[in-house]
Image (tube, rainbow, N blue to C red; front, side):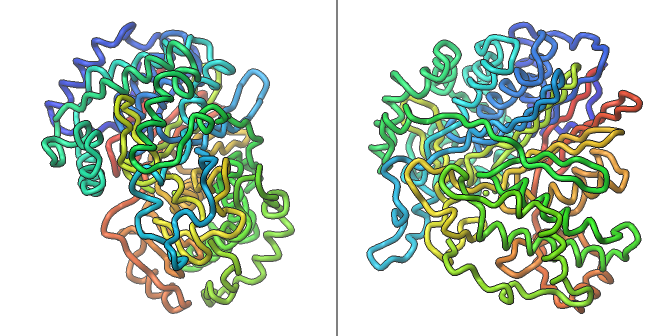
Length: 567
């Protein structure tokens, strides 16, 4: 039986189109009966169903992760792609092995710390966001090959087949695609190849319009045939370098040839009997999550009033993001004090600075002397019948990345260089500041907020994560606390959200996050609020109840993803 935990299609036309395409996928059939439940939750129905088909064909969670990643690269071009990167958090059930596959982008070898400054030393607006100079060296193709070769059961070509199919045959535009394309219309219009692929006669396509990406299908086919050489060497690599250079970028063949996936030990911590396993640097997610949970561990949150509980949560967020801005960066270039920042003693020390009746002013900490990711990111969660699991958060940074496609490749470039510190004291496109640890250097990986996470105790295990730029970490925090309160995935993904990131010194929140009485009490403590008319995030979550064997999954109702549990 296949159970849809949440599914939203945009109209009968798109629904019919999905059925037609899924019916034509090679090897497409009903999911076979499994002795243990499997589940996938992703941001797009085609990606979720493609992953389930890979599981049904004998693949494991890691094969499914390759398939889901590749399909999302095709059907959700505003969120991720072969021209981007990400973090894949893997758990192998046979021996309990956890690893983070770091497929984060790298700065080109010609990159330097002042590359986005003008002659007066001021940041040039948009230079690190729009255009080929904003693009780091992609890591997703290398990561997919690595995961398939080292952890998968199926041939890489089989796991990439659904993505090749949808690139060649096309996928229908939905409402979320239209919102993202409208947001980035000017940037997409500036690149003729990107405009031809992602727009319709220079305008945002209507719902149901079919996006065909023949060049991308050919690039995926090259990877399926030749592995990493199909992207980082040969004709695809040559076209990428030529296209980037012609568009004002600084990539070289040496950049592509030197790119390597890195396997990293995940960050871990304990909270209320749960083990937290999350992303390691160059993501700040795991460190910040464990820091916040350690601060909150000594508070009786369930017994506190809503206002008092929210107050200490905001203060924990403020302090974790303060540390993020000062200490976090690529561990291959800087010494990140992970053990200290995630330690209980450190958390208790900084918790003593929280006043129960008064908000701390961020300025009171002092802005780090050498100060220096968006909703366009994507996340998916996978659990297979053997208990292998994957939480993966992928990105090209801003919606549609740099909005540049090198001719003949179909590869939409990222603009992850904006995640570096372009200049001390100047925030990036998400308002985040960073210190010397995150300054631009050749070959360095920019700091990220992506936070794929496992949460486990003797009773169950959760797999969760979300896009959302700088707000990713706090969304995952709220989900974890809701799990600890006894709620399931449908609740975690639906929760109203609030966020504080140290600078700017405001509490951002969805409109329905607080009632009037709570807002009044929090304002009386000195908090400043900034409501957002739009929602944020797109959480994808799975929970396995170890006692009953029941699996539940949910996709964020704010967008149009799908969660499927097969039994």
